[in-house]
Length: 228
Image 1 (cartoon, one colour):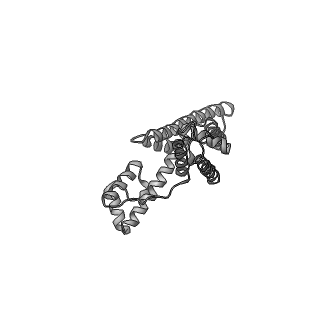
Image 2 (cartoon, helix red, strand yellow):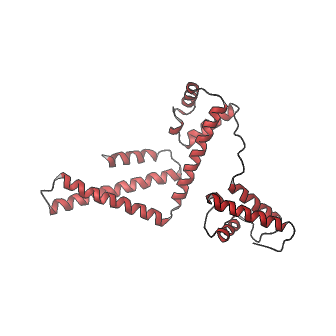
Image 3 (spheres, helix red, strand yellow):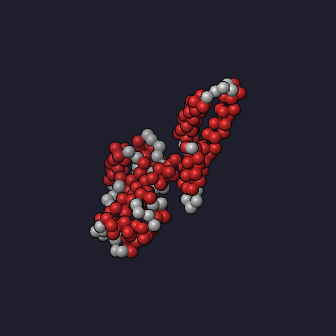
Protein backbone atom coordinates (compact mmCIF):
# COMPACT_ATOMS: atom_id res chain seq x y z
CA UNK A 1 0.00 0.00 0.00
CA UNK A 2 1.13 3.57 -0.72
CA UNK A 3 0.57 4.62 2.89
CA UNK A 4 2.67 1.73 4.21
CA UNK A 5 5.52 2.73 1.90
CA UNK A 6 5.30 6.40 2.92
CA UNK A 7 5.27 5.49 6.59
CA UNK A 8 8.18 3.06 6.33
CA UNK A 9 10.29 5.54 4.37
CA UNK A 10 9.64 8.37 6.82
CA UNK A 11 10.37 6.11 9.78
CA UNK A 12 13.71 5.11 8.27
CA UNK A 13 14.59 8.78 7.76
CA UNK A 14 14.14 9.45 11.45
CA UNK A 15 17.24 7.40 12.29
CA UNK A 16 20.41 9.44 12.20
CA UNK A 17 18.88 12.52 10.59
CA UNK A 18 19.50 16.14 11.50
CA UNK A 19 16.88 18.06 13.44
CA UNK A 20 15.47 19.67 10.33
CA UNK A 21 15.08 16.47 8.32
CA UNK A 22 13.83 14.78 11.46
CA UNK A 23 11.02 17.33 11.57
CA UNK A 24 10.24 16.78 7.90
CA UNK A 25 10.01 13.01 8.43
CA UNK A 26 7.74 13.51 11.41
CA UNK A 27 5.48 15.70 9.29
CA UNK A 28 5.14 12.83 6.82
CA UNK A 29 4.30 10.40 9.63
CA UNK A 30 1.67 12.81 10.96
CA UNK A 31 0.17 13.07 7.49
CA UNK A 32 0.10 9.29 7.06
CA UNK A 33 -1.66 8.92 10.41
CA UNK A 34 -4.23 11.55 9.41
CA UNK A 35 -4.92 9.80 6.11
CA UNK A 36 -5.31 6.44 7.87
CA UNK A 37 -7.86 7.94 10.26
CA UNK A 38 -9.73 9.52 7.36
CA UNK A 39 -9.76 6.26 5.41
CA UNK A 40 -11.16 4.40 8.41
CA UNK A 41 -13.85 7.03 8.95
CA UNK A 42 -14.90 6.92 5.31
CA UNK A 43 -15.09 3.12 5.32
CA UNK A 44 -17.28 3.10 8.44
CA UNK A 45 -19.58 5.80 7.08
CA UNK A 46 -19.86 4.22 3.66
CA UNK A 47 -20.68 0.78 5.05
CA UNK A 48 -23.33 2.24 7.38
CA UNK A 49 -25.01 4.25 4.65
CA UNK A 50 -24.49 1.81 1.81
CA UNK A 51 -23.89 -1.76 3.04
CA UNK A 52 -23.67 -3.08 -0.52
CA UNK A 53 -21.07 -0.50 -1.58
CA UNK A 54 -18.37 -1.88 -3.82
CA UNK A 55 -14.63 -1.43 -3.35
CA UNK A 56 -14.74 0.98 -6.29
CA UNK A 57 -17.17 3.23 -4.38
CA UNK A 58 -14.91 3.16 -1.37
CA UNK A 59 -11.79 3.97 -3.42
CA UNK A 60 -13.55 6.87 -5.19
CA UNK A 61 -14.67 8.40 -1.89
CA UNK A 62 -11.26 7.91 -0.33
CA UNK A 63 -9.41 9.38 -3.33
CA UNK A 64 -11.63 12.45 -3.17
CA UNK A 65 -10.91 13.10 0.50
CA UNK A 66 -7.25 12.17 0.09
CA UNK A 67 -6.87 14.92 -2.51
CA UNK A 68 -8.73 17.41 -0.33
CA UNK A 69 -6.50 16.54 2.62
CA UNK A 70 -3.32 17.20 0.67
CA UNK A 71 -4.77 20.47 -0.58
CA UNK A 72 -5.55 21.52 2.99
CA UNK A 73 -2.06 20.53 4.11
CA UNK A 74 -0.53 22.69 1.36
CA UNK A 75 -2.69 25.71 2.25
CA UNK A 76 -1.86 25.31 5.94
CA UNK A 77 1.86 25.07 5.22
CA UNK A 78 1.78 28.22 3.06
CA UNK A 79 -0.30 30.19 5.54
CA UNK A 80 1.69 29.19 8.62
CA UNK A 81 5.05 30.28 7.22
CA UNK A 82 6.78 27.74 9.41
CA UNK A 83 10.52 28.05 9.80
CA UNK A 84 10.90 24.46 8.59
CA UNK A 85 10.08 25.61 5.06
CA UNK A 86 13.00 28.06 5.04
CA UNK A 87 15.28 25.56 6.72
CA UNK A 88 14.32 22.92 4.18
CA UNK A 89 15.12 25.32 1.33
CA UNK A 90 18.50 26.08 2.88
CA UNK A 91 19.20 22.35 3.16
CA UNK A 92 18.39 21.86 -0.53
CA UNK A 93 20.73 24.72 -1.49
CA UNK A 94 23.46 23.29 0.73
CA UNK A 95 23.08 19.84 -0.86
CA UNK A 96 23.31 21.30 -4.37
CA UNK A 97 26.40 23.31 -3.45
CA UNK A 98 28.16 20.30 -1.90
CA UNK A 99 27.32 18.04 -4.85
CA UNK A 100 28.69 20.69 -7.20
CA UNK A 101 31.91 20.78 -5.17
CA UNK A 102 32.17 17.00 -5.31
CA UNK A 103 31.97 17.00 -9.12
CA UNK A 104 34.44 19.89 -9.37
CA UNK A 105 36.89 18.04 -7.10
CA UNK A 106 36.52 14.88 -9.18
CA UNK A 107 37.39 16.83 -12.34
CA UNK A 108 40.28 18.69 -10.69
CA UNK A 109 41.75 15.42 -9.41
CA UNK A 110 41.34 13.83 -12.88
CA UNK A 111 39.51 10.79 -11.51
CA UNK A 112 38.28 8.32 -14.10
CA UNK A 113 34.77 6.90 -13.78
CA UNK A 114 35.86 3.57 -12.26
CA UNK A 115 38.35 5.27 -9.92
CA UNK A 116 35.73 7.73 -8.73
CA UNK A 117 33.11 5.03 -8.11
CA UNK A 118 35.57 2.90 -6.15
CA UNK A 119 36.73 5.87 -4.07
CA UNK A 120 33.11 6.80 -3.41
CA UNK A 121 32.38 3.27 -2.22
CA UNK A 122 35.50 3.11 -0.04
CA UNK A 123 34.89 6.46 1.65
CA UNK A 124 31.11 6.55 1.96
CA UNK A 125 29.79 3.07 1.20
CA UNK A 126 27.74 4.48 -1.69
CA UNK A 127 28.25 4.28 -5.44
CA UNK A 128 26.56 7.57 -6.36
CA UNK A 129 26.95 11.03 -4.86
CA UNK A 130 23.18 11.50 -5.21
CA UNK A 131 22.72 8.83 -2.51
CA UNK A 132 24.89 10.67 0.03
CA UNK A 133 23.44 12.37 3.08
CA UNK A 134 25.00 15.52 4.53
CA UNK A 135 27.54 13.56 6.61
CA UNK A 136 28.56 11.48 3.59
CA UNK A 137 29.09 14.56 1.43
CA UNK A 138 31.22 16.19 4.11
CA UNK A 139 33.26 13.01 4.52
CA UNK A 140 33.91 12.77 0.78
CA UNK A 141 34.87 16.44 0.47
CA UNK A 142 37.23 16.07 3.45
CA UNK A 143 38.87 13.11 1.70
CA UNK A 144 39.33 15.13 -1.48
CA UNK A 145 40.96 17.92 0.52
CA UNK A 146 43.25 15.38 2.20
CA UNK A 147 44.28 14.32 -1.32
CA UNK A 148 45.42 17.88 -2.00
CA UNK A 149 42.30 19.33 -3.58
CA UNK A 150 41.26 22.86 -2.57
CA UNK A 151 38.11 24.66 -3.71
CA UNK A 152 38.81 27.66 -5.88
CA UNK A 153 37.84 31.06 -4.53
CA UNK A 154 34.39 31.88 -5.79
CA UNK A 155 33.52 35.37 -7.07
CA UNK A 156 31.88 37.88 -4.79
CA UNK A 157 28.16 37.10 -4.74
CA UNK A 158 25.59 39.89 -4.76
CA UNK A 159 24.72 39.18 -1.10
CA UNK A 160 28.41 39.39 -0.15
CA UNK A 161 28.76 42.70 -1.99
CA UNK A 162 25.75 44.10 -0.14
CA UNK A 163 27.19 43.03 3.21
CA UNK A 164 30.61 44.43 2.28
CA UNK A 165 29.22 47.85 1.37
CA UNK A 166 27.16 47.85 4.59
CA UNK A 167 30.26 47.15 6.67
CA UNK A 168 32.16 49.95 4.92
CA UNK A 169 29.32 52.37 5.64
CA UNK A 170 29.42 51.31 9.29
CA UNK A 171 33.17 51.89 9.43
CA UNK A 172 32.64 55.33 7.88
CA UNK A 173 30.20 56.20 10.68
CA UNK A 174 27.33 56.68 8.25
CA UNK A 175 24.98 54.19 9.91
CA UNK A 176 22.81 54.61 12.95
CA UNK A 177 22.35 50.83 13.10
CA UNK A 178 25.24 48.94 11.45
CA UNK A 179 23.89 45.52 12.49
CA UNK A 180 22.55 42.83 10.20
CA UNK A 181 19.06 43.82 11.30
CA UNK A 182 19.81 47.38 10.23
CA UNK A 183 20.76 46.11 6.78
CA UNK A 184 17.53 44.12 6.49
CA UNK A 185 15.56 47.23 7.48
CA UNK A 186 17.43 49.27 4.83
CA UNK A 187 16.60 46.68 2.16
CA UNK A 188 12.96 46.81 3.23
CA UNK A 189 12.87 50.60 2.89
CA UNK A 190 14.77 50.59 -0.40
CA UNK A 191 12.99 47.76 -2.20
CA UNK A 192 9.70 47.54 -0.31
CA UNK A 193 10.10 43.84 0.47
CA UNK A 194 10.84 41.72 3.50
CA UNK A 195 13.73 39.23 3.34
CA UNK A 196 15.57 37.48 6.14
CA UNK A 197 18.94 37.73 4.35
CA UNK A 198 20.32 39.56 1.29
CA UNK A 199 20.88 36.24 -0.48
CA UNK A 200 17.12 35.85 -0.86
CA UNK A 201 16.84 39.02 -2.95
CA UNK A 202 16.00 38.59 -6.65
CA UNK A 203 18.95 39.51 -8.89
CA UNK A 204 17.37 42.77 -10.09
CA UNK A 205 16.58 43.97 -6.55
CA UNK A 206 20.00 42.94 -5.26
CA UNK A 207 21.63 44.98 -8.05
CA UNK A 208 19.53 48.01 -7.09
CA UNK A 209 20.53 47.68 -3.42
CA UNK A 210 24.20 47.43 -4.39
CA UNK A 211 23.99 50.59 -6.48
CA UNK A 212 22.20 52.43 -3.65
CA UNK A 213 24.86 51.38 -1.13
CA UNK A 214 27.65 52.25 -3.55
CA UNK A 215 26.27 55.76 -4.05
CA UNK A 216 25.75 56.17 -0.29
CA UNK A 217 29.33 55.09 0.43
CA UNK A 218 30.62 57.60 -2.11
CA UNK A 219 28.70 60.38 -0.35
CA UNK A 220 29.80 59.11 3.05
CA UNK A 221 33.43 59.49 2.03
CA UNK A 222 32.95 63.26 2.00
CA UNK A 223 30.30 63.71 4.71
CA UNK A 224 28.85 61.83 7.66
CA UNK A 225 25.64 63.86 7.88
CA UNK A 226 23.45 61.24 6.19
CA UNK A 227 22.53 58.37 8.48
CA UNK A 228 20.33 55.30 8.17
